[in-house]
Image: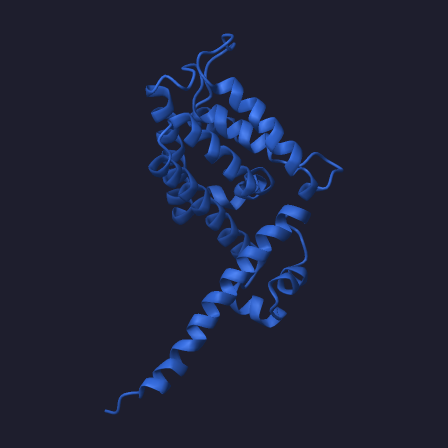
Length: 217
């Protein structure tokens, strides 16, 4: 049996590398388009933004659902990376939390949140694993700040996720991409309210992740 020469091997490998790059470009473009126009945005526009043809897009993603699936996975993984790297690289735990919240806002979690409903709550082990990783990373970040006496003790990770989701979701009738300057300003106000010592006592109880799941339709 003959073996491929080195140039032949490179020719064989190149399409796989090109395909991976194209897939990454499609997911990145889809994330931007879904943020701007919602999950029903035209797939043709996603292909145009990615700089590839429609046929290439459909070779990678047979339908809209599979593309949304990969976009959500990508955003969750990137956000978990931010939480984990922040905890490892920043000495002050509340500063690490603050940096994470602002960086997570730039991932447009609030705008993409509606895409996590429906089919994405059933029989999706990869999404479940990504969600567990993200929640664990954020919980660890908050617990580190709490143990250092820098985070008030009457808030939980659910409170943070609700605020992050709501404050990064564009208001109806507004341009999503023009909201950044307001989003980060209001996140800063929210973070100031999280820092210990607390200036007031919150009503009710802290929102846990279990509370959020029970509230979901």
